[in-house]
Image (cartoon, rainbow, N blue to C red; front, top):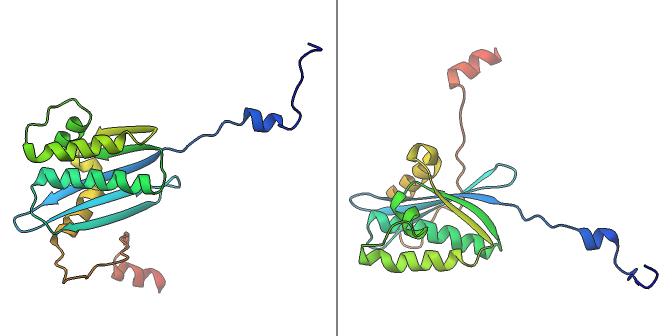
Length: 178
C-alpha cells in the first residue's frame, strides 16, 4: 500500500459523484376530422406541471399520420432541449407498436414516418414508448381536438393559452362571499 500514490487534486465527492438524469413524461396525440387535422404534445415537468403545445396540420394526412407527426414532434422537441431519458405515452396502439417493432408497417405512407421516429429514438439514452387508453390521455386528446378545429388566417397563431378548472359556479362564489 505504501507504493500506491493518490492524486489529491480530485476530491472524494468529485470521483464518486453519480449524476442522475431525470426522466420526463410526454404525452402525444393526433386528430383528424372531415376537414382538418391537429396534434398535441403534452410535457409533464419534474414538478408535475403540464406544458402543452397544439399544432394545426395544414397538409393532407390520415389519422395515423397525425399520430406519427405528433410523436415525431415530441421527440424533436425533447432532443432540442437535450433531454436524454423520457417516458412517452400515446393512445395510438398502431403507432406505438410499429415504432417499438412489435407490428409491421403495412401502409406505405407510414413507412417513412416509422423510420424517422425510430431514428430519433436512437438519439436518446432511454426512451420508453407506451400505449395508454384514450381516457388516460384525455388532456392531450382534448387539446388535439382544439388544434384541429380552430381556423387560422395566414400567419396567425395563438402564442399562449392556459386551461384550468373552475370548481365553483359564479353563483356559489357570490353566496360564499356574503
